[in-house]
Length: 238
Figure (cartoon, rainbow, N blue to C red):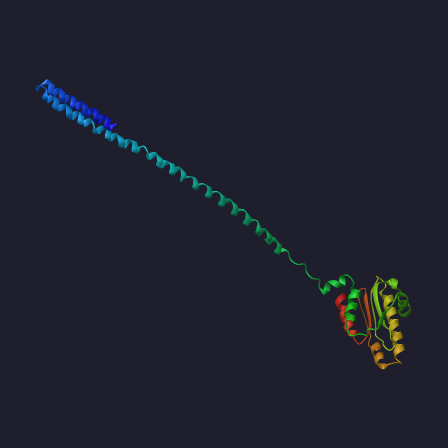
């Protein structure tokens, strides 16, 4: 475009110069003034070319949009997950609050069976191992005591005739203590007569017998551990 415009301008200049040469010298001042106006129009198209280069500036807006995309995703995910889980585990702290059940003490055993508890204490002593239980018929024959007058009882006599050790422990029914105690006293009198002529050491045990009562409970003991038997009896009946 610039070259074509310059070519036209040059052609116009040549034409004017020819006209001035042919027309004479009267209009020379006018012809001299017109060429500068044609020359000033030539550089005008050159100034328009930089305008096209400035149109490429909007390309800088594209990266501005791309820079905004990575800012939103990382802000949402890590904030929600860790807040709920740690609050559930401390609920297990309720387990240590349970107190262990108290172990039964020796004082609680007499409430179930005082007679058996007293005998267990006596059996732990160094008494002869060869002792037999007395059933209801033998109890009636030896002591003259009816088993129906008793709530429970333990009666032990030696299996060997060379020992005088003997124990009778019983819980007596209400109103029958006098009859039971009389039967025990009869048994002690028979033992005294039996051992007075035989084995003085065993006869000494018979003489040192123990007969004690506490409420509806009674103990008769012929043994070298008679005092210990009374202590055990008092522990469970008082």
